[in-house]
Image (cartoon, rainbow, N blue to C red; front, side, top):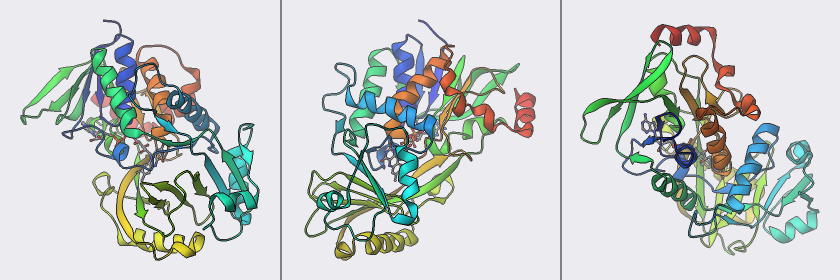
Length: 381
Ligand SMILES: Cc1cc2nc3c(=O)[nH]c(=O)nc-3n(C[C@H](O)[C@H](O)[C@H](O)COP(=O)(O)OP(=O)(O)OC[C@H]3O[C@@H](n4cnc5c(N)ncnc54)[C@H](O)[C@@H]3O)c2cc1C
């Protein structure tokens, strides 16, 4: 075996991608997932949009790498294509046109979209548009196939995957990670030894570290999705339409209906991410009235909520924690975790394996470590 004995905490897309990379590099990997099946939280509750036109340049770079993987995964990775190229349109009203331009800066592959062309693609769109661009190579990803591909590939490369197993706390000694305390399926607690631990627990990622005074300030924000049944239904091959600005909303065709998010982002406790709130229904109705008034009375077929988790500066938290050797993060993937997963897995796994990745610097956990938390870590380590 090559590489450190690594425990990956979390069986969402982040943990699965890291485990896949590490196992294929020959490292001994144990992935633990608290639920009885992987992918039960953000990874199984998102809008599955592959979008790489993102205003933050380092994040956009990861998104493009993730997109390249989705477009052309390794031979045998998944039995189905991971990407449906419907195109993704970013548009904004005149007072927010700058938002589209920020996302499109330096992107020769994006096409400006004239107003009449946009209305042909989305005939029910209402209101003035100041700027619109089309990313023709992007669209809708298959998150379930992506997750299964990472997990099956990790297993095939020797990783062990333990479901119904919760990581309770890191174990540290002399400034190093030495293991993780787990609660196993039987309810029994035990410590598994480890040279490296990767925290990839989504909304709960900080908990095993916080238990020994090494937490980081991650905030889950709840977002709702609604599947509507408008008449007429949007054409099934219509592109994703993401409307930026004060009334941010996105829509795309889904299962003969229309998937819509009013882009709500209330900060909540991790366990409240999936608890739906009446206020989101009101917001969705307002956004429909704003952008698609002809569809305002469309019946709602289904609806759900999920957590997008953020660091205070909005950037991902990837790589080694400066307070304790062997502690790594793959967390705070916000609203781009599905798109970026393959790139996140590669970046984090490489650093666990001791390979330098200078481009990871903007995502370094060190930027979030305050003097107080550094002292707390040193005391408990
Ligand atoms: C409504 C919504 C729409 C979105 N739309 C998109 C989109 O269109 N495109 C896109 O790219 N991204 C989108 N995202 C973002 C994307 O879903 C997330 O960034 C991504 O799924 C985060 O993955 P994760 O593995 O970090 O977290 P999760 O999927 O939440 O996985 C974390 C896992 O860790 C487990 N866990 C936590 N703590 C422990 C512990 N102590 N021990 C063991 N297991 C633990 C949890 O049970 C969970 O299974 C959206 C998110 C939401 C909520």
